[in-house]
Structures are given as C-alpha cells and as structure tokens.
Image (cartoon, rainbow, N blue to C red; front, side):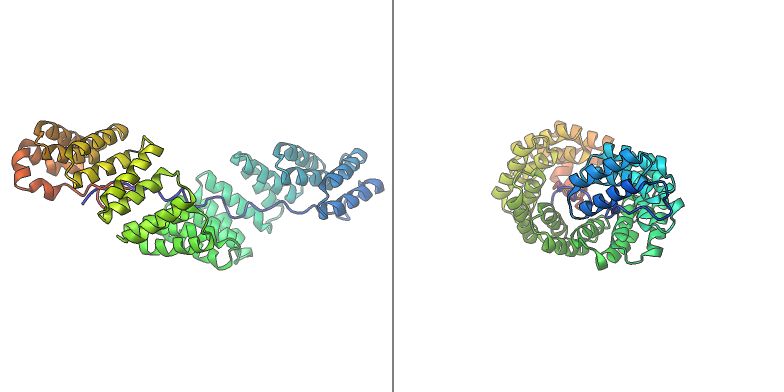
Length: 419
C-alpha cells in the first residue's frame, strides 16, 4: 500500500479548436462593383486563374498591378491578403484586409478573415469584434459563428461560446468540428457530461477522429470512468500509434484499473517512441512496483530523476520502493528530497514519518507528523499518534490509519496527486 504519483494526462486535451475555418477562396467581384476599370478586372481574373492553379507569386504580381490601377479594388486587396495569410505573413495580411475594408466595409468575408488573424495572434478582443461584425453582416456565415465561439472559450465566456456553436449547428447539424469545439468548451467549463455528449456527436463525422477519441478519453478520466477512458485512448492509439502521449494516457487508465501489466506494456510502447519523458519513466516504475518488480522499479524512478532531478514524485516513489525492501535509511533520504522539492507536502511528510518510526527515530517522526497535520487539517486523526508514537507503532495503530503512500502522476486513490 502506497501513495502514487503518476503523470497528468499528456498534455491536455487537444484544444486546438477543430475549425478556425480556413480562408475563403478569392472571389470575383460581384456585378454590383462598378468602380473597377476593365484593365484591373482583367488583371484580377488572370491572377485568380493563377491562384487557383497554385501559382501564387504570379497571382500576387498581377493583383498588385490591379490595385495600382484601381486602389479601391477590394477583391484584389483581399486576394493579396489571402496569399499573405496562407504563407503565415499575418501582419502583412492584416494590412491588406484593412485596405480591402477601406473600399468595402460590408464584406463579411473580410471581417471574418481579420477575425482569424487576430485570433491566430491571440488578440481575442479584436477577434471577437471582427467575428461579430461578420455575423451581423451575414448571419448565415456558420464558420464565423464557430470561430466566434472559439474566441469566447479563450476568453472564458463559456455560455456565450456554447450559444455561438448552437447558432452554427442549427444551420449545419452535422458539422463535426463544431461539435468537437463545443466539447472542448464544456471541458474547460468543467461540465464533463456535456463534453462527452458533444464528442460523441463529433466522432460520427470527424475528418480527424483521433483527436476526438483522445479528448473523450481525457474527459472520461476526469470523470474517473477509467474503463471508458481506456477504451477511448485505445481507439485513439489504433488511429495514431506513433503518438507516445496516447500510449502514456492509456497506461494511466490501466494503472487506475489495477491492470498493471497492461499499463506497463503501454508505458514501454510510449518510451519506444520517446525515451526522454520523465513522467513516463515514473509511471513505468509504478507499474513495476505494482508487480513487485522492485529492481526494475528502482531503475525507472532513477531514470526519471536523471531526466528531471526536480521530480518530487519520482523521489517519493523511489522512497516507497526502498521502504518496501526494508531499506529505511535510503527511504528517508528519498522522502527528504521529495519534501524539499514539493514544499513540504503533507503526504510526503507522512511517508518519511513512517520510515523514521521504523528506525525508531521517534522525535523526528513526531515532528514530521505534526507538520503534516498543520498542512492538512484532514489528518487530525493522527494527533493521538503524535503524543505516544512508540506505543501506537507497537500496537499497529499507525499502520491502520496512515493512507497508502505510492505517489503517481495521475490521481490514484490514496493521497491523490496530479497524475
């Protein structure tokens, strides 16, 4: 019995929202646009043909000539902006879109693309204003509602985000990316049941079901439904077996289900893809410790520490193994390092107190117990032990009251730590 410290689900759900909708293709100006000269229109049309065939440099050259002839040619400015955005030149694209708006401030598509640019650089207030203008001009522009919902999520305005997604889904009920985005928003809001419902809808039509299964597994983990989490992570792993993080998370789910051998297999698969992640080594050590493979567990915890000397979880876990082996001095040394790194965490103080008691260093053990109680009021049941630690140890009373002490990087049942 021990407190476990495993790793957080890596790393978070895939909150890169499913549809920051792409830049709409360059459009020919409508027949109502009378101001463009014949020469500029010809240049624009030739540029559009080149753009459609992927010859963007030549298209840009012609569109620049078009705006030289007709500076108020909104469609040509938008074409230049499209190319700049596709190439990742966001500031340049923003300048072109502003020129397009100076010619035509009623272009919903232009406002939409400006919103995308502000969103991409994290300026969410300006992105919100642009997307709101887009949906005012064209309420049927579903992608703008979706992207406005993404921005609302980034701003922590979850109810508004859900309303935006709902507007889009009323128009396109099968828009899988929007269901995915709504699921992400519900995760951020802590409403995991609604997140599951949305992800289940997203799976039905997702072009990239891997990330939906992954996030669904993450959400079930938050709900402590580890059997369902394992099923989802397994589905994700089947779709993308080269992602070590999904194997890590699948291992975490198996560890929670006490399926230690299955967890061990997953962690080894993760390490075959990325051998330098200390959390994976830590959790592999936990799986070995569950299987009483103490030497292998020690190797894994030491490897985790080698990769990250500040890993209090691995130091604590290493102490646990030494304690199970009756190597009390080594256990005390490891717990001391964990306590130092974790700002005197109560659970680590308890672990060291038990090891100190085994060494009959009762004064030090009593001091650790007192500090643990001070840091965690729920441990006040230990107060009687502090007054007569030796007698309580002899009678086995402490063994019954101290929770299990294995630390993992995922919540584990006794003294849960982040895993």
